[in-house]
Image 1 (cartoon, rainbow, N blue to C red):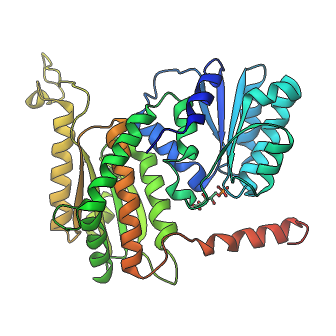
Image 2 (image 1 turned 90 degrees about the horizontal axis):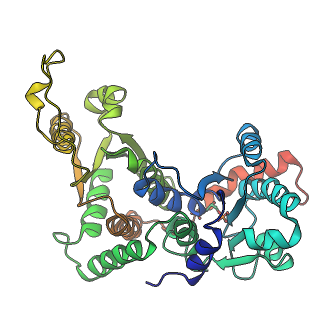
Length: 374
Ligand code: PA5
């Protein structure tokens, strides 16, 4: 796998800006957001700061973003494979207008990057007409499988993520899962078999459970990947997610004793920052029995204890062991899920690469909005 040349060029051009707005939805948004959230330090202010738009139609959000951007030096990366999706198109109209008024026709050429189909779509026409910098979403790569293309790599490079390491991890996983057609050693195959056997035994809901808040958007990405790939022809595991231990205090009761239609997939990250529990003079909070132990060890004991409890409550639990949250291992994890998703959907008897049901809401919305020709 090669780093898209555009990624490095755009990252270099945008590094002096205060803010970059990444516009996109679904597969044109979640891959980037999931990797960024897994790897960034949310408490460190970065330059440029990354913001998201075009992933909903909230006017309050857009108004606040426009107000915030007043007198700031910003750029836009707009991503849409079809180039016709309403949510990103609406966001782009507002943000492009602001940029254009601030910097004029020449200025926007340096500050806008379009990633879309090579030849067709409204966005491609717009990019060509206005001579904007642009990258291509490969024709044979669907949105939810596109994080390792310009769709993910360009904004990730702008955000300072090590895209070479990300691709290196994905490549290593690719060589592993493609060559080892043995359920015992191939995680993608084993995972696809596990979820299909759970589904066939009446476990229709899968919980993606992680013990690190950084993985919240990997869970969102995973939900789209499996939900959109498998949920068709009245079939498909319903992908849901929980953040643990947080949700043990809200959803824990349901998972332990609610309807027995769930199975669980746990992401166990082995290494985390070293932080030893403090010893207190008075032990007023009764925590001295933990003094000197790594907080990560305590977190992983919570994981083991929860897995054991859920299994004893009739919930099948599988585990992905990730050595560390870095670009290499995140790349490997995402690639393994993508590959597993293809196998799992074919085992279920559906096409993993289409999404005919997504059109239904659009037809109604266009009719109700009075779009010409709808
Ligand atoms: O995975 C998919 O194909 C979808 O989620 C799309 O990515 C999403 O609908 C956005 O489409 P587009 O990139 O054409 O704007």
